[in-house]
Image (cartoon, rainbow, N blue to C red):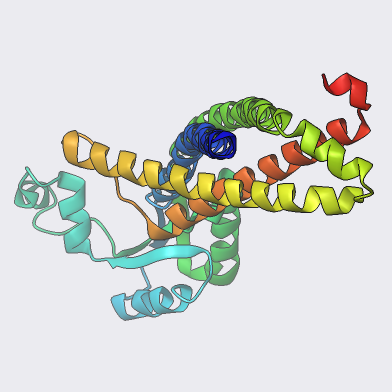
Length: 293
């Protein structure tokens, strides 16, 4: 009867420890998920920035399209596309205005020349990166170009705005991980407290510290992995529920990002549980028998 009660107590302690660790990792996952999602949004926002290449009048459409094909192979660009005079006038006037009204002012002639527009990859969508792209284009096609332009204020705005958000998320995530370490460490210390006499008994009969630690560390490893998987399942459920219950929010669950998030939670869970178990075991291994009471 006593043995059954002890087994139930051990199982209950084991389950409560896993639940506690899972909830803490779930909270970390929410913050890290927001951080990774923000990184993806930032990348998409950066890659909507646009630059334009304006050519000298002597450059014909065929020559400009040849340049387009050449720079498409460059590593700086997410997208490169030719803008015909007809498309340029339509973009200039907007969808709700008649381009013919503008053409009438210029006696039916389109004043806008053919150009090339480009959108940079996110790594180059900074003021320094866009300036480097402009200088490189002018160096290679200097005699053929009149100007390479981009909106510097838009580039600065996109990068500065997201830097502030990333800093906030990073600070919150760091604080939460520190709190998580403290909570998980306390949870594991309490779980090991009930086994302090078993640990000391093994030590007194000649068991080495490594031999004593091994089963506890393996158990900690299992708890960390299981807790990480439970936290990941809760996160997936949260994302799914938000996507289906709140119509104003549409969350795209990117498989790559979610895999990174799951891997991060597993690593955090395993590292914290192993470290907490190690330090707690060292405490009881160093304690004298009288101090255990």
